[in-house]
Image (cartoon, rainbow, N blue to C red; front, side, top):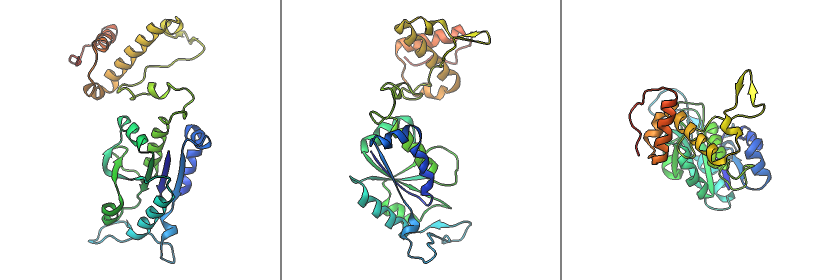
Length: 253
């Protein structure tokens, strides 16, 4: 998997050399390259922005340095990349989108700054616009890193256990079940007995029930998007009854 990033702050991406993404880079499962528009500026001060036409606050990133940085990145990529602009106007990035990004094999992120970038650059060079959430941050770099990290987790061999990605929160449209580790009793609070039973079928059923219940409690919007199996409906109703909570409508079967 190849990731390119057009950014004014390439050193921010040094963080990807740590943790799971770092191991994937060292194992040659992925590569990350950065391209600084200042390196392509024809201005003697390496300026890459200017005042917006029509007036208003702030500055707008200029067409030419960005275009030339994108051109250089495309020439470096092993295969033609999909060019993605991180933008508040973009589609919201969700876990369900991750596998489709992985399938592209080559992605070039453009991290905007200031008040945005010249619309003519978007029209000419950008394939897709994506956002990581409904809030404003100072630039696209953090958004690009979030997307790169999420995609990397699905690269075969990137995680220590082949089932880790499949059991992540949101991977099946549900929040993850509670996790416990040793010791089995802390401050008079014990690990649920089923997790110590060694009975894999019962453990799987308990975990699914907890995922359903936790999602119902914390993210009911996710359940509204998911069609539950008859078994999942039964487990969710058991969860609700066990906690003596009033159901907020019947789940879809």
